[in-house]
Length: 171
Image 1: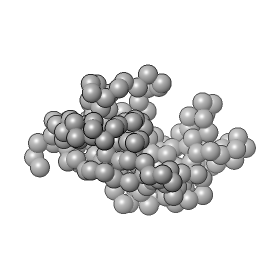
Image 2 (image 1 turned 45 degrees about the vertical axis):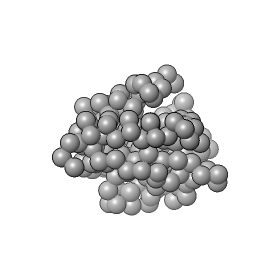
Image 3 (image 1 turned 30 degrees about the horizontal axis):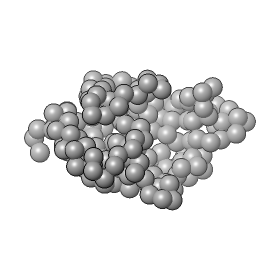
Image 4 (image 1 turned 90 degrees about the horizontal axis):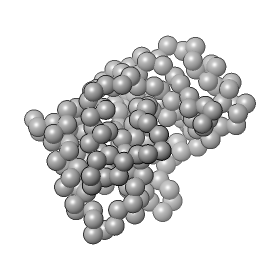
């Protein structure tokens, strides 16, 4: 089964992201706004208890994740994805690195760019028009997220939470 690990921001930020996603994101109905910390990976039913145990330990040893959104950006020309860009922060980077060491696989495809997707699968013309408009808007948001979620993918392609893990020792 496919799993992934994400941070879900506050309702305020999710509502703001969804105001764009409902128009510009083809995955709007499949998963709420989130920050992907571990891309999709496969886990067998036999391996799942070990993964959950490892995640519990990683979460206990991690500090809550601070996010600072400061602009709209895009992955163009690699893809037409549009997102709220998050400044790099040690708490996010450390969490990402912990989830890409044993027993998890490393991410050799691309570097970690923390973000919340607000648009994807757009035509080049749509992408260009929307990015031009959104880059003129002032986007600022800061918050600390104190939990990560292990998600699994349903047969219809949507994602749902399997288990939530609180970040930090003071839980």
